[in-house]
Length: 134
Image (cartoon, rainbow, N blue to C red):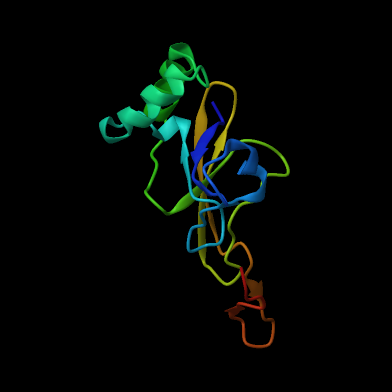
């Protein structure tokens, strides 16, 4: 269920050049993707049908993905879906709010972190943003 569809630019339409290609990137410099657990929408039906036709996913997996989706609220473009340790995800170090979804084998939980990277300044009594960057 942690699978995703990505689009890649390759030097030619020859499948052997796939490794030489590059993934399309989002403005956050992460690979653009369509996670399986969000692909239940009708507009993605042709992609899902292609995945099923090529035996890349099963109907059972897609049914499990649809069930997981019901248990979580995905806000378009506002968060990451984390499914494994070592997986890269976007963090803006001076943000006061960060949302993500942590996926387990049969469910997905929403997490929102507030002021994760803020630091308390003892002199002024205020919180400051000591870090910047992404």
